[in-house]
Length: 253
Image 1 (cartoon, rainbow, N blue to C red):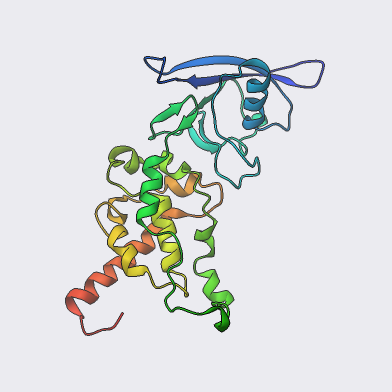
Image 2 (cartoon, helix red, strand yellow):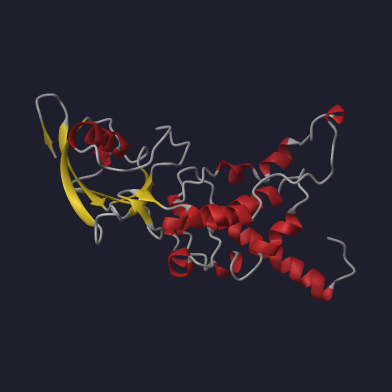
């Protein structure tokens, strides 16, 4: 990086470019971008698109580490582009779309597989008992909220899928960390009654038992959700279910 008279530094970005309609295969293209010290990689991409190459395709929305749209591989690591600051990198910054997903165009990944698997686990509240409006809210204690609150912080950025070696090897089967974590979030909710339906999806070889507990999903999570811990808790709960069903069937869950 070299600093110019405006206080910005010239940063070399090496960006994967690919248009499936016109390109035989992906290729890298290098750009020199003047970046301010407080800029994140997303700011650099926005400058590039506005001033150097309007054809670059990527996703972003909030610029506040909330929407999860700007997930990318930055120097080989799954990151939110709005959370990866240029000042933390030296030399060329390589930017690619998320690993393990097909490329829609340039830095845009196809999220269809993730969305389909998320739908399978029913990541929404299925009330254990129906209440009318007149009966009021479904009340919950702070302790009951604490059981699942951390897992409710998932923003569906898919960084954990890009980091997960099992998903990379068996993505056609493995439901994956975020979807299983969100299923666990609702299974832990005192107001919910849909656990049996979700267990049919996640307590399977395609579900949590495909996980080999590498822990990379938790390492890259920008919201500290810790999906690795959620998956291990699901394994324990599933094991208890199996023993209750096969050896202690008289015990009520």
